[in-house]
Image (tube, rainbow, N blue to C red; front, top):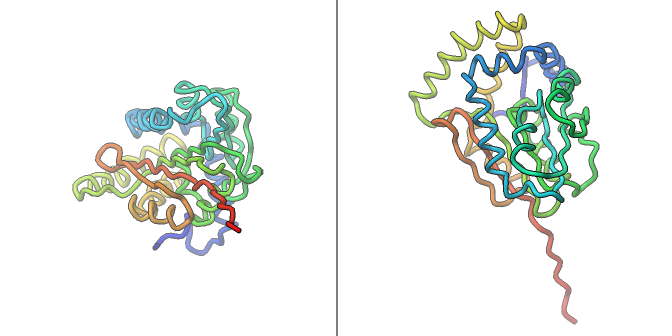
Length: 249
């Protein structure tokens, strides 16, 4: 696997990269929703709603659901409107959690996705919307997700990916370079953020490669589906149920 984790600058350690990403998101939080709507023509909201609908069978009243890397709370809001469950939202960026509070009354946890303050086997479902590629260690992230899930629990990771079609890949390269970067810089006033964000997408593993990483990390029944010609992909995996077989005398 070529990319092992996000790398805002090649000389940064994992700890330094984590601090850089957290601070960057803190700076863009106030205008994050505005820029998402502007740059995606609101398609980002459609992807989140599709993810919520895909997870609807698991949004039961007794299910404990963690929306990790919740950002400003858009995916959490879609989940809450799709099904009744016991929701928790977590992000390691405090200003993002402040934005989430305006959309949901779910308990909020300020925590790094690589070190969750959650007991082993506590969750029925974990959702992540456009946050996993910002982990500084992808393998460690998969292992941590597996740790906090109950046997039979599931994870759903919505993330930008490398489109499988050459024409779409070319379009996205042009869009990121000549539209996303300059508009993001202008509206947010944070040039380094809107240089990093498209670069983090290009460095993230492709859908098949990321599915393989999930399997290697211990997830079963891993599948993925592309959204809108492969601009984004939804990966779903399940934690294997532990079955003990008594030895015969």
